[in-house]
Image (cartoon, rainbow, N blue to C red):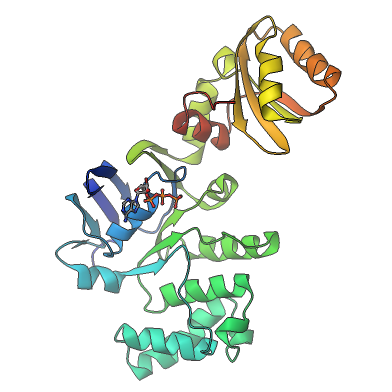
Length: 322
Ligand code: ATP
């Protein structure tokens, strides 16, 4: 009987010299599910993925993919896993079909299997109209589809996709998302992404990692509830302003009733979280202060209850310095 296509990670650890990049993490990705793997920059996502795909040996712990140990059975793991790296190494001078055929031969697929499988992945990834195109002439979205087609070529039960929609335009993002959602059931998918709406739309479960440790895991609904649970006075208000984040923070921090104002995101439009006595007059004071300073108030609402807020709360529990 074939092994269930699970990913089981047990106390996996990776150090680079003295630096602990992945710290004793454990999680399971159930057969046929799509699980989001999230974390801020430098959290340890790529390091974990590279261990699961046998590109990097773990320093400690173990991981199994479709029943095979990533350290001792790397050949079997590679046969059972399809990997879309963050930047797909494609050969610009090859044609799409030729590229897939080359990649399949590298994996030991014979001619008959390739003849059967290449048209299938081309169709699944909406590439059938590009078979004779030079890879170098493909748009970024098509190149990403080719990367996914390549990962799917040997029909692996498990897929690991690292930032599959990065750099795509909104229409391409929607198509790629649809493609990934269609893989559920037939494949087990670990999806690393920074896009939280993507996770809500297609992932059954979410694992959040930060500084090498698992910070939270659960369904998107469970995590959102946890965010709301941290809500009320503690989560405070979210204020979206077109104005200089540091100055907005100082202005709001000085208001009576404000315990703390912190910057959640910076840019021409910034978002701040304001914690304090939420008795209604605070909202009025915040709005008045922002308007008096000549900044544009884009939104003012109660914090808590979204995946994005939960992510911010647990990956950056301290204040973002102004
Ligand atoms: P991002 O979202 O930015 O890609 P990530 O979650 O994938 O981040 P990793 O690339 O796994 O994070 O890196 C985790 C930590 O390990 C980072 O602090 C990084 O600087 C460090 N790191 C990664 N590769 C190496 C290496 N080869 N040598 C030393 N340190 C490394």
